[in-house]
Length: 240
Length: 101
Image (cartoon, rainbow over all chains, first blue to last red; front, side, top):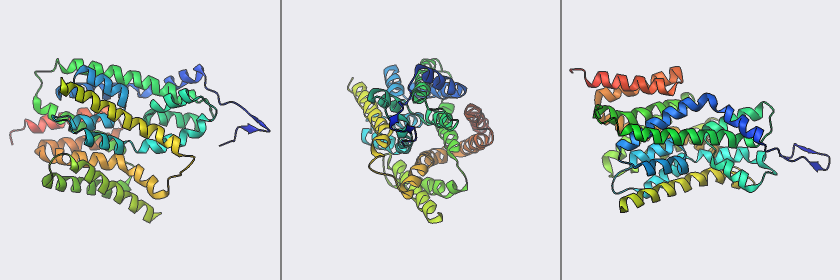
């Protein structure tokens, strides 16, 4: 953690506008995917009856694609707020690990910059920032630059998608029903890390199907997710 | 109007929950290091959440949904291109949906 201590002097951790710019350029290759994702989110949200304000606030405040999609899936009257918050919390637990790994980067960086950098941290910006570190760079602003570029793209695309959603009235409604589910399936495929995921995923799916048949509401998501992830962790630790 | 306020409240709470996870690991790291089980669990959470979420939706969508899911999953694994995979899944779904079965 103190590898940059030389003698008795601690060299300050750099946090420069140059680093911000490099971070923003670092996520450039993945911006088209983020924009496409955001457009689909906005269209689907309009279809579900979310207002433009709600879409904008979601993109600005939650700023997490998977969580916003789950919230969208749960979006119905009356809003199951507790389930939504618990689901979002559980989905984002991985951020705890990501936040822990960047902690050493921010030694000596002011609180406001640090907290804002973490506010803007996503899977993608964290990924490119880690890659940048591994190449020997040490500018803490990279993470914020990458996050800010994604945040802007995500917000603009979500709002634009919401506008498009109002223009798509004559599209086959069955296709819209499939849009969100298909989206989830593709997202799930992107999470695949290897054969070790197969059994936990099958168990999560099976438990979800059973609980959905037995209990009302959205308990099936938490039940399936907990069953699958805990089994996965147990199998992982036992193998190690 | 109350529904509108409720929506905004739900979004703000979800935003808080998300930020808690983003800042939480940073704040906790000096006092507490996750053990191998917790670390493995965090890694398994996203996949399990989405598997649980899609299973009933795919199941109830019928043959068109089963085909659409299979195609979307396979194309994503094969190409790694999100938008290509989603497009293929939608096309497969539409084709199967309008097939006179």
